[in-house]
Structures are given as structure tokens and as C-alpha cells.
Image 1 (cartoon, rainbow, N blue to C red):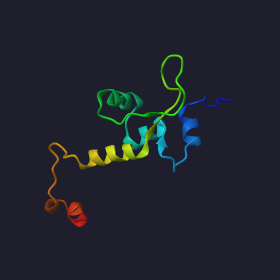
Image 2: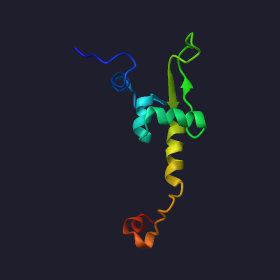
Image 3: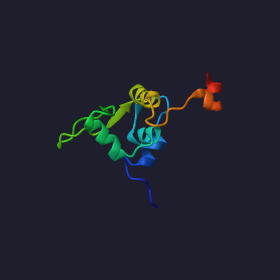
Image 4: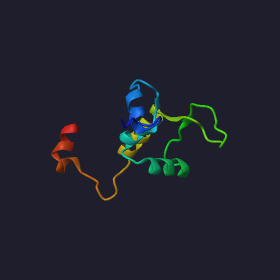
Length: 102
């Protein structure tokens, strides 16, 4: 049978506790609709929250296990939503859905 390898997306999703304050990369990918490479590029650029180390360091100097802090990811999402949308400023009076929210 084709069992998922340890640490794969499937294993992380099956073992994920929705009440945890720590989020594995597969959950972060789904929450922010970004791929792993874009997330790590944002971490490197300082435009995305960095993960925290949960496991011991490997001989290579990299952490064996990392995760993201839920509140930091939620704050990043909120900031993205609150940021003005370039060229797409909508006036509530012209958009009934926005007017209804006020």
C-alpha cells in the first residue's frame, strides 16, 4: 500500500489538533492560500511570521520540527484583509453588500 511518509501533508493533517496554538506548515498553507516556498520566502524577507522550533536541532543545524503560532498567522491574515486594495477601493454606497455590512 502507498502509506504517507512520516511528516507528509497527510500525516500532519490527520494528526492536527484544531485547538492547538501551533500550526504545521500544511495548515498554514491552507489558511493563507500560499505554497510552502512562498511562505518560507516571506519568512526570509521578513514579510511573513517565522516558525518556532519545537524539536531538537539536527546535526545540519536545522530544527527537526517547526510550527507557526496561530495568533501570529491570524494577525497576518487580518492585516492583509485590512490593507487597502490597490485600484479596488469600493465605496459602500455603490456596493449593496458593503452597505449592508455597515
